[in-house]
Image (cartoon, rainbow, N blue to C red; front, side, top):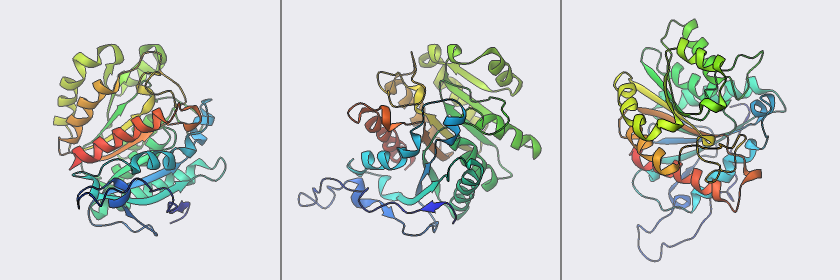
Amino acid sequence: MSLWRPVAETVWQGRDDSAEASNATRIFQTIQQQAQFTPLSSGIALIGFECDAGVKRNQGRPGAAQAPDILRKALANMASHQGHERLADMGSVYVEGDELKPAQRALSDAVTACQQSGMRTLVFGGGHETAWAHGRGVLDAFPGERVAVINLDAHLDLRKADRATSGTPFRQLANYCDERGREFRYACFGVSRAANTQALWDEAERLNATLVEDLHFRREALPALEKVLAQADRVYLTIDLDVLPAGEMPAVSAPAALGVPALDLLPAIEQICRSGKLQAADLVEFNPQYDRDGQGAKLAARLAWQIAHWWA
């Protein structure tokens, strides 16, 4: 596959407790590392998207291209429980310079191939331009089904622009669905009214999106999610880490002044995972250049850990 590379063996390392018991394992010991991109018939395909070209175009803080391996390293030493043994590292798609479009195409093709072979996909971005590629790959894998796109994010990312950026993915997915006569089912939870112009709110209303603001998350998120899930056959979950408060997640392109705490997000993530409809998930916008003592990487990896565990 073009624009693809395997992960260095040095990434998946951790503490070895195997002398204690046969099940005293950590993820670096149970993950399947693929030397070539060959989808399996089942399991969770972990794919990196080494990209911050969309962030740069959107005038954000670059650095997310280094995120996938940093998040892998943070995940590696966590305990391996039910679900984690199903993880297979399929390597990373990368961007050459500012050539975003071919990299997004490569990621879409990789996602579709994994989904059609029987795998679910867990992608470590990259900026939120990851979502256009990941979402398109899921839509292509299930052309006749109702796919709900659930975005945990402070931003709607429905911008209108001359070229793709980290702020355009859901407008692109909406246009993609419209061109194919499909309904675009979009929900954004944790969205900040202060961080989105009225034009973006108007676009969300035009698309009949389900919106839950950060101020109302605790009260409204779970009931709204129940309705979204009931009307979907498959779900693509994308988590922009800037939905979290800056105090919990400093390592993003656009830190949130308010945000939704992780302990409030997790019940919503669990509801999605346990619905039986989650087909794909990603974590995006992590920027290791602005992390503090690995705090952000550890939290992002814990979210990925929970998704793989609840997915089981």
